[in-house]
Image 1: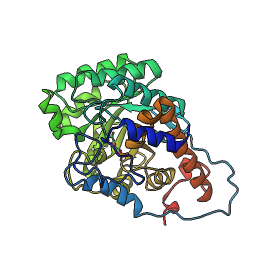
Image 2: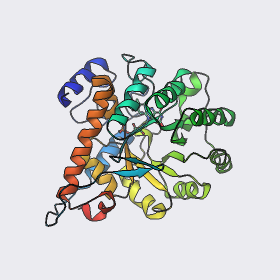
Image 3: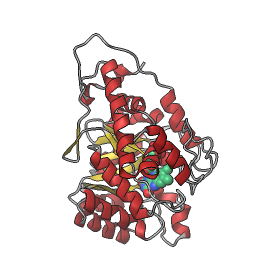
Image 4: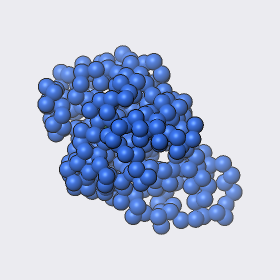
Length: 336
Ligand SMILES: Cc1cc2nc3c(=O)[nH]c(=O)nc-3n(C[C@H](O)[C@H](O)[C@H](O)COP(=O)(O)O)c2cc1C
């Protein structure tokens, strides 16, 4: 399966909801939420891409590394790549409906599995969305279930369901606190207090992920609460206009919490070199969003697999050319 074929088929199947631009930077789709874009001016999405563009990586080729090792341990499991699939939902209202929610979830979870990775599943404004993710996790062998910041009772119910369906980890996209689509469909969300989050973390033995952290202060709170991992993320620029790009805030967050919790980053990652940059800026692993959707719509689970494997090959080449034998060796020296 060729990358250009996947992109072309995705362009057709996404029916204008995503144009699958040559350079996916949030300009053409500014304001398209619901849809695949960034909220209002689209600046938060665009800032994710331009923040990565600000950094360069430099050559280091006097060494003996022959085959860099991209493997990683996460949530007590081994994976072949640090490229994981982000929670991506709303097959109808965000992506045009050529795939059902269940088909989308299945492609994402299975494709990730085939590539030696795993997927994070999501939660959304329609009742079947969370269940579709869990069914895919159960069928294809696990991943992480990310729940919207709903009422405490609902979150607790969803955490139990994640446990019963074989999730490796569970968490909340805390930055989904203001999603109008949820309220419109009678599924209200809102911010959660420190104590509410602590209660939720305390009720499960699964590793707990807090997705949507963009400040040092909230990352410190996450450590104190006992989370296993934060995802430094602005939700792909979809929840608040004009936030900084993730690669801008990542270094200061990492400086404070590295070693205490796992730091995952997402937003604007389009190639293995973007992955290399995020890791060099201190992330332990990354999530990819929109490119995984192209994989699913353009080539099913094999398309998702191809997207992850291509980025992993590019990462591996980047590591070879910057003198990194394994992911631990990818540090700030890589950045110019
Ligand atoms: C169409 C679409 C649907 C999304 N759905 C969810 C979701 O259900 N839960 C969630 O935590 N994040 C969701 N996200 C955000 C992604 O998980 C991720 O943070 C973001 O897409 C990363 O940026 P990128 O797309 O530029 O790689 C969604 C993003 C998009 C584009």
